[in-house]
Length: 238
Image (cartoon, one colour):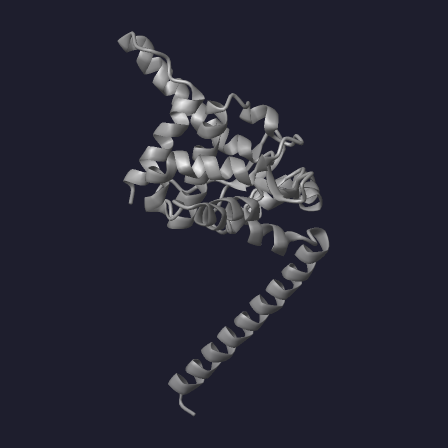
């Protein structure tokens, strides 16, 4: 074996040793992580799937996130994500500014903004309905879809069945809403704590509109109108 072959063999063996050491270190790290954060795989998987982890919808997971918030922030930063804690009691990942909404996200947002606007039109306070026993009935959803059909149709939400499958069901999966059975033994839905995520968006827009209205001396825009504007903007993206 000449010098070149010997050097090549030594380099290959050194690289193999380095890789084995990294694998062993990674395995040890994974075991330690599993011991320290036993629900880390489930929590990170849910967050990356767009789920809100709240003190009412995922109690045990929320407790671990609250106890080890900094550790999860570091873990998620390693994957390019930012963990956000809302003061009312839920965690979610901060949306990436450079990424546009996919169809699923637009459907979820449109379903919620339509619901916010329709409930407000009926004189029902959305905020007071959060975590309260004030269910949204199938009749409510039927009337909502009928009212918003023209704007919901392009997003695949134009019928009650589509609104349920592509909107409400996904809001339930995301931890924003919960399913219930009402007094008539029929399916109904309630709003969870993460509803504040969408209310914050409508309030922010309403505040911007209010500022513009003050400058232009026109009527003040409320949350109801802000939700309507947001719904229209989602429609225009298609």
